[in-house]
Length: 351
Image 1 (cartoon, rainbow, N blue to C red):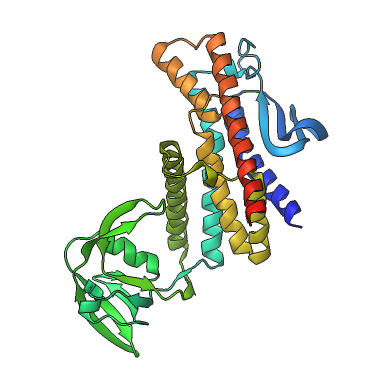
Image 2: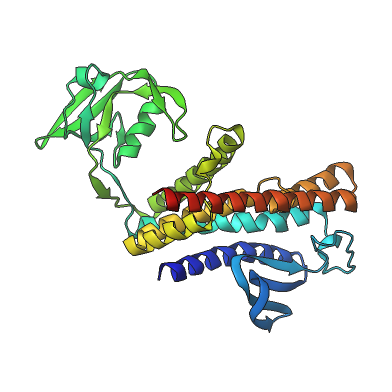
């Protein structure tokens, strides 16, 4: 059942990505010959409105084959208003960007659905108070519930961190303790900490940690939209930064996961709850969008760079350069996939 869920989720993500390309291409009048979920041998196909819609043998990806675009033959020139290579560079960029954008849009839709169904988060309840910290000296106790900071209502533990980090000076905390509301003024101090990539940083803190209690957020329609937007932006930023840290060597290459890890994560989430499955699917969708925007020639980001080059220089890269960079891009992608599978196998046998 887990394998079926994995294939369904992956096919859905690929479909949405390629649908972005398809819609943008058709908007600019480009003919789409093939819309494929998967690569390799054709398993099922149906022609509809001039496009062959098909499922192929290897379900780890997909593509839309447009008139006038063929990475294996960069010298291909097909004339006509319905050809990709007769479109202006900015129009081609829109077509290329539409795929990753569709992934970001899908993630936002999933996060919005999660918010409507009942997103859960850590309660703003204190678990521990660090000795000699600002919170300790202010008289904050274990199990205190923070309901407001200054004029900001607190709904989750995440709200507390945001306000402390993005504020200056002392803050007025309103604490619920034994059904009584107590006001405490706390002046955060700059302390050593770690970010999600385990880098040492300094940030404003008051010396508290959550109790671990989980609560369900009761969000209005507008708050659900904000939740979806913020979650999509946060996950996108996190993945962009993760790629940057990987290149810098801050994150070891052993952390790269492959299809086995992805499949296990999706399978575990599907057995947990629909919200867990939606959360993982949204994160993978954002991941797919971000990775496709990397300036690697075989990806959408690489093709966008080629078109930006054409816009600036008023000429296309030579066929020889285009072919060389595209092959190099596929080598990079293939190497990353093999590394991911190698790491997956290592994790299995090192358990």
